[in-house]
Image 1 (cartoon, rainbow, N blue to C red):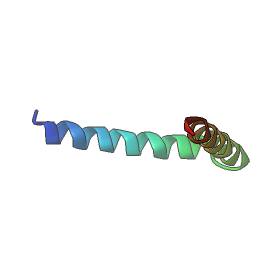
Image 2: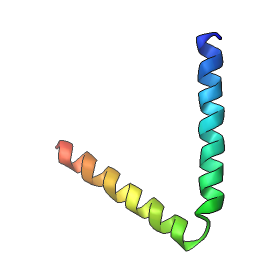
Image 3: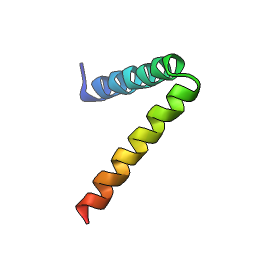
Length: 49
């Protein structure tokens, strides 16, 4: 397989995983998880400074 094909497969797999997780974590729980992830990213970003 060419590198482009591998990259395309990874993108498709990632998109499929995101959709599955979105369906599984639909509703308030999904929003809580998103908030936690955003908080972790913010802490990591502020920690670099």
